[in-house]
Image 1 (cartoon, rainbow, N blue to C red):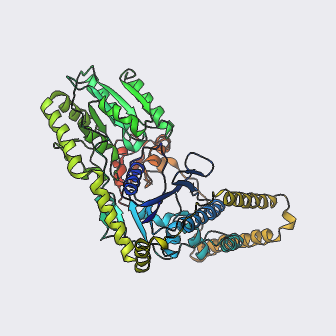
Image 2: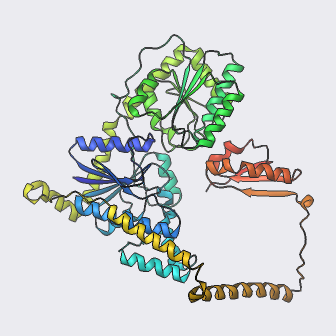
Length: 559
């Protein structure tokens, strides 16, 4: 079977959980005799790159209309080119976050069976795809001007760009956790019959650590260094253990990319300095999978203080396989791995005191330490090995082919006779497509710039300005006539700030945006020192803002 894997991220040096899972499954399927090519985004490089059977050709989609158009020209033609050369029996999508939804619609149009592996909330919100939204605005004519719509549709027709119309074929969907499936069902996606297949790891790559030091003292965090991972909770818990409980020999090692969220790294370093932990906390930066094993072996307790609802938790599996006792929150998909007091010790998110007490239990009770360690390894051996997981994924892939009768007959015919094997050819590099789109983008920007220098010749622009002026005058006159007819005189009044008694702020964005809005909240409190200020947030962010000194009350709204 020939499988084209389309992933939003597949760099060899990245340690995100789903990237590791995708590479593991691809390698296992290759061992089982499947022919596989991977199409993924350009990540960290400015040009297309081919590495063996991995084609880093897809563009990172941006919301601007002109970039959406040029990105789609590249992504759709690249997808067609690879499909025409490779002739896959099935397209296996590993999330399309920040990649183009048009690849999925193209596969359906080309009558290639599709299967999805979902490891974040992409499926629940796929309609927010920029290409899908662009066509939605064009069809209802609510956002773009007539001329912009005309150019957009004309260019799409020239380059044979598919319109993302209709619905995705979601008959064959795999979720990485029950939590993710529940989110998709909550927003009305037809995935009630979808399979839940957790990630797995190769336990031979992460053998059990049998030799222990006399007394555990080395704490470890591995993962992204971003606010919603709760690294600050680990640092503050260490400070509490040292100052309040007098554990003078404790240290913390933080492994992760320091360049991903530099402002948060600066905040962590300030937190370390304020608590006099410079000699106890060490940043190791990014480490590859081959390097990380020795780090697990050189530490005693693994901390995973995540503040958000984790889709799953690949690093948890690695640490538990090595026999490190885990002190963690059990949020989202993580709760499907961890059992409090059995294979881990659990604490509420961002509860520094509870986190410190759980670490203290492991430090003081050697029997508890050993039991948690052994149960953690047993959990991985019984439930999270890679081979059984790939068996389940393989069954879904085969059923996907069988459900497409025409493709299944063609596939069986090719298996029965080697003479009917469809010849494959190596796809051309997409440099020619990128050259065309860059030229198109340059012309677009050039023509857009000319209108500011040659206004007399742009009569269409004059007509547009005239019509917009009439619209403004109409709205203004309607406003005046309405209040005249109902007998209310509208007089301009200055707002008396001292009379503002209550303010409600709705902040339903993600954790990073909530963190970045804190300066606004501070200045708002300075401007209205006596006013009641309420803040509305998502449930997953509540613990992050519940003790914010600038607001009086925090409410949650489940999106």
